[in-house]
Image (tube, rainbow, N blue to C red):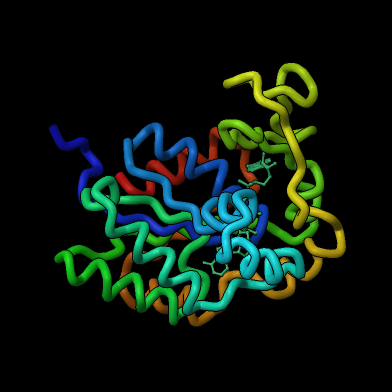
Length: 219
Ligand code: AP5
């Protein structure tokens, strides 16, 4: 049986640290939509030392975007799989108009489109604090923050008991570069505004309030 959000395609937009990954994990549970994160896909490739991972790591470690050609090819392969045929939630893709148009074209070939583009807004000072305090489970990927959303036991995942780690690109000098180079460009926001699918969410509310606002926006 298809769920309430079957065939719905959502993109989560926002600067590094806005809460895209955290909220995508929560919304995936609420909507049963598959969560597709290009950042997670690149990190998996880095961990497995694939050719793609080696290439991506050069860019990620400098706080830069991986080239469109490579990113789009990886994303198109991912959405061609069965679990993405009945809707999906994209986290970290698209980052620019070239990527957005590639996604539009791929969905159009299946008679689908982006139904909601949800822009999570957070000020720079708060982004720096969030990225500096982020911890991630090495096993299941659950996200924590040492001050805002700490695990019950320091360094241990509540969900699966896995070890928590901090991302290489959350070092202060890389964070600075990410904040300079990776905020959603105005042209991308305009792309979705023109398509009448853009909604802006205040990302500086509590985790639960942001989740509620996002779910309200797609209801
Ligand atoms: P990616 O992993 O997508 O990184 P990002 O966009 O920089 O986003 P983050 O994952 O850092 O932050 P987030 O918004 O998910 O925040 P989170 O929920 O973790 O990409 C990594 C790299 O891969 C890029 O730099 C690039 O090189 C490459 N890449 C990926 N996609 C690409 C693409 N399409 N094209 C080209 N290159 C690409 O939250 C952060 C912290 O804040 C957590 O600790 C969390 O607990 C806390 N927090 C969240 N919400 C709240 C809240 N409401 N209140 C208090 N704390 C909160």
